[in-house]
Length: 105
Image (cartoon, rainbow, N blue to C red; front, top):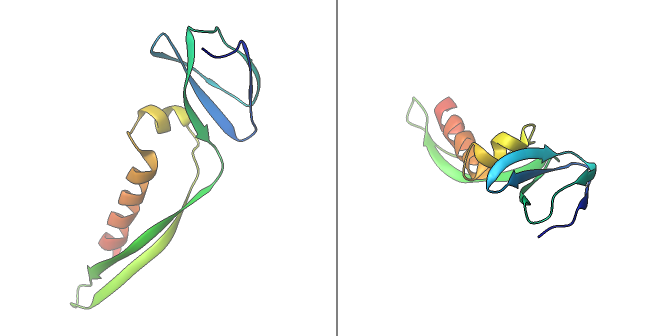
């Protein structure tokens, strides 16, 4: 069980479930929860993150083989969708970036 008064740090969002169902997103600052009924399910950082895209092979239209790598910068704007929209948001975003890189070459 959590405490009644909770302090959410700056640049974080806490996803609260009440009795197993989404209830609300807590914003930074002082928040009040009902112990044993409300549960902090996810903690999302709203800061910008970097993800390293590992080197991968690609072939251009004129049959030249390349090794592509990169750095991906991401920031969560909707903590609800990042928590419930996909199982692992960072993995999904990195896979999308890799597919887009190969597609553009």
